[in-house]
Image (cartoon, rainbow, N blue to C red; front, side, top):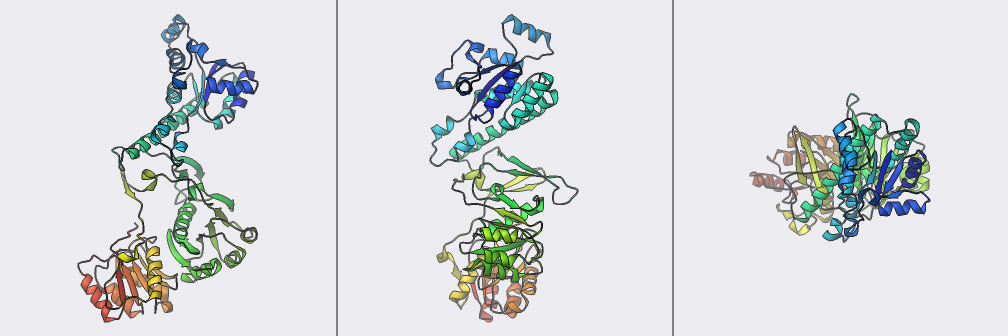
Length: 513
């Protein structure tokens, strides 16, 4: 058997080469890989012995040679192929071990130029893997250090790489090269200023198989976007608790997105993707207590998100309740000791990341529809207070304004039609996902109950009729923030003025379906 080794990632290559040599496999390697193996005391032959040609163009051309590709692509079950190999004095190559230049990781580094990125586009390695994978009935295409152990095990036990292993390796190799090309295409499209290219190519790496999907009869898996290296759920670390489920991950992502959207210490409690509790105050433990008061019934079995390191007092406040999980940027030792006593409680840490996030595809929001994909840029919140328009006779007080801004930030995380009631930087009522906006107002008021008087209200879109404003005023709501833009805005303003309410238009809608 013959093997060709050419790797940029040297992890595990010494052990692999030693295992292959010990099993009697004749190994050839490109110059950099061969030098590394020679230092480790493993004798492998240079690729130039196969090609009778030295590496040229600074290593750009080393394996792109008919002798190598004929040895890979010749079908072992075709006598004429084997006869042509013999005629030209070419030997078969049975194993190719290649990993590619780290293009995706390189372009995430700050300050990388286009020229530097282009140098990280692997040509020979991709060609070798594709050739080996195409001919997998006779050739093993080894594309990752995670595959080395199974290859050596097969060679030592049966004298070759088993057909089943070769087919799995081929599938992995084509997935790798497809993803690699997708990363390059995405990068070059963005460099050319094409935010929405004619063909959208996406790459996701599998992180885990899940017990099931949203429901037990559905299969599920978790994939991560390698172009988003920052502080995300995909990059989080699980400290304690049972394996995360499909629904856990959805709600953990929502909890983290909501909590980390606020600058002051914030805690949210998420149930089915919506914040049923949310508070943003100076003390994190107090933020949790206020968030729990927002809707203590719905919070049962929910997921907690915090945007500060969880301390002992916050952990003690959390411990008595029943919650599925918590996600935060960190936990003190004392907090962990307390939270670990909660049986089955999942503790997730999303540490801060200094990695730069890519623009473009990494900032897209995707929604799947039958037969296709809807793509949009991520909904952002405009911070400019000067663009807020007071449309009523009464202006909001300073206290109302701070609560209006809190509720406006909160409402964009609630599913439409979204209504949020807030008081003293805490959510006290929420209406979500209703076909009618006035029904969302009614649900939010019912949740708020006796706390509704002197609260403020945020709506993710305009009020098509003033009925929602009317019932909010009757319940004691004193100020409203909404986008405006309805043909009946004047009617809404008239109702607000009649009840001495303050109302602010933002000019920006925040639908979330």
